[in-house]
Length: 246
Ligand SMILES: *[C@@H]1O[C@H](CO)[C@@H](O)[C@H](O)[C@H]1NC(C)=O
Ligand SMILES: [Cu+2]
Image 1 (cartoon, rainbow, N blue to C red):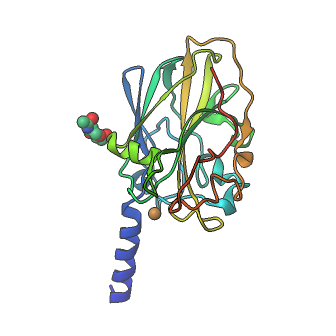
Image 2 (image 1 turned 90 degrees about the horizontal axis):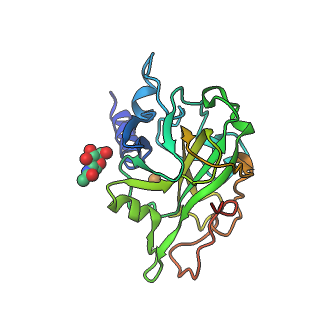
Image 3 (image 1 turned 120 degrees about the vertical axis):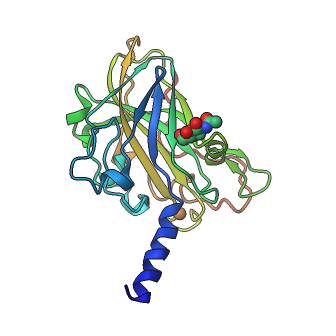
């Protein structure tokens, strides 16, 4: 290999090393594997999982130039997972991320969207997401401050969300996303890392929350997207639609 090629491979490896994805979840006490994008993308017959596949083998992101495209829904060229994790309404689900770079501060946001049937065959553009969890700036006293991403890292790269008690039973896509804001002071500098998983909610109620299509969740000018985190922030404006209050 010529030296220039080696250098470029090394540079790529360094860039890739830091970024995470959801490698598994625990729901109702059971462990489920996710779509291991840096392994399964290279296999002829990757195992079926609850995780949506993507072509983001660089472990990269979708930025503001992609917010109005299907790539923002469940990451680049995402296709539904074939399997489904059972979760009881009102219970906690633990989402396990792979190593996340400390410098990539930002919020973690979680949505659900009903599949109105089997998620394995759902058309992602029909999904309407409602927000069930969102944490942003935890302590801004010393910019860039402590963010949800920092809490996730210190919690062994896990993030726990509670499934609303009152939503109707059925199949949903759970969309968990980190928005890295280290370059967000520039237009299209925020980096979205969306991850989608199929869950089947049991023991729920009657609520069927309305939601927002993936391609309408964000604009690249939203105050929580185009934001300089190295200056003091009074109150971080959480991106996306309002929280669904169970
Ligand atoms: C931290 O996460 C890793 C990877 O998911 C897991 O193997 C390990 O048991 C976890 N450690 C603790 C203390 O929970
Ligand atoms: Cu990065």
